Image 1: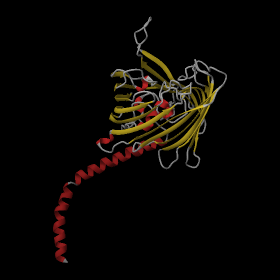
Image 2 (image 1 turned 30 degrees about the vertical axis):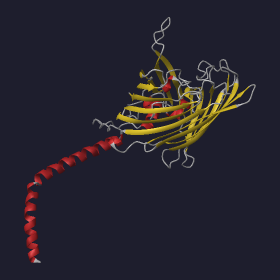
Image 3 (image 1 turned 120 degrees about the vertical axis):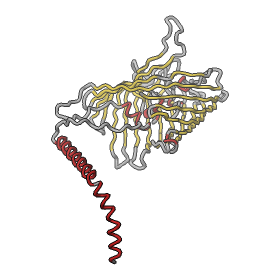
Image 4 (image 1 turned 180 degrees about the vertical axis):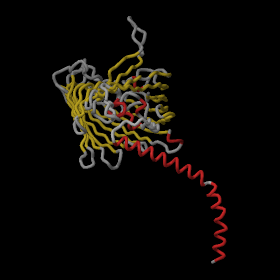
Amino acid sequence: MKRFVAIFILFLLPVCARAQAADTETRELIARLLARIDTLEQRVTELEKGRDPKTPAVPAARQAPAEATAAHLHEQAPGPETPTSEAAQPVYPSLKLSGFGDVNFSATNLHGTSGGFGPQTLLAPHSGFALGQTTLHLTSALSPKVSFFGELTFTARTDAGTGSPSAPGFNPEVERLILRYDANDYFKISFGRYHTPVNYWNTAFHHGQWLQTTISRPEMTQFGGAFIPVHFIGTLVEGAVPAGGLNLNYNFGLGNGRGQVIGRGGDAGDINNNRAWLVNLFVKPNLPYGIQVGGSVYRDRLNPIGGQAAGEWIESAHIVWQKETPEFLAEFANVTHQPVFGRSRNSQAWYVQAAYRLPWFERLWKPYYRIEQIHVPRSDATFRAVPTFTGSTAGVRYDFSSLAAFKLEYRYYWLRDSAPVKGIFAQTSFTF
């Protein structure tokens, strides 16, 4: 035992010697830490008393915006900032500007007409580059409970420079213009021009291709398309209630229906004395996180140019999983047209899309696949210009920046009464 104690003392002596040599540096470090603690305690005391400390705030760490929340960040008007002192007060209006842009390339075997597909689908008789939409989002808080949101787009024209006077190079468009009063989370009322909440995609992914995983929207929700009324002009009541963890969300709308061109809304006024109305309900349960399930009903009366007046009913349903690993979206819609004279006709459309952000390579790659279909009876005169087809799309998205992405996809479309269309499409999209 004595021998063990002696050995332990001999081992401890050099350690103590080194500790004594570093004792001065240790005391200096402890002194600096204590001084830092005193400074932090003084700052906490000043904040609790409501005074504005002179010490500058530490900047927050930079974070890359997530795709799933970017759409909502761009469409919500900013609320007043929390004042850091009694003298600081929110300033109204507080306008903020953000935007989107994209550049596209397409090469297909289509050498004739587009078969009813709009320019946003990028099906063209010639291969090459095309400038996509330039989109501006304007958000402004007008008071603690009143906000404004606007969305403007500029789209390149194929007939630019022709005619007399010559056609301009771009078409400007007011896509959305909304004034909203937020009473609380349960009740919000707004007036303006909306993307009709008649299905999921139309209200989750607005103008700005960077927001969505794919290059093109499903054809049933395509801008400029006619299958569903993309825009709605009127008033909207919305809100959310917990509902025992289901988180029930609702939208009730009343406004102008489709215009004489059924692909457009009644911006300048309704074309008849029958208002369109809609009901949209969906739940976002706490568990599993990211799931959303819902449905909509839309009612209108149509008076299209060169067509017969008809009543229109739209019923739709969706189920989505709003995650990156995986992302899953599925929707179905049935459109019923009841002419004044004649039998009713039903047209259906659906799509299923899946994507998965790969865990490798810094999670920058996201492959995806979508299958979709639109079926319109030959006897439905209202939807005569809507294509009947089945489409398959496979692609990959590469986020080379937190605010910019490159997408590459291949499409194969089986068209009724026409040869199949296939092509390669590429896009660089970004937000600023």
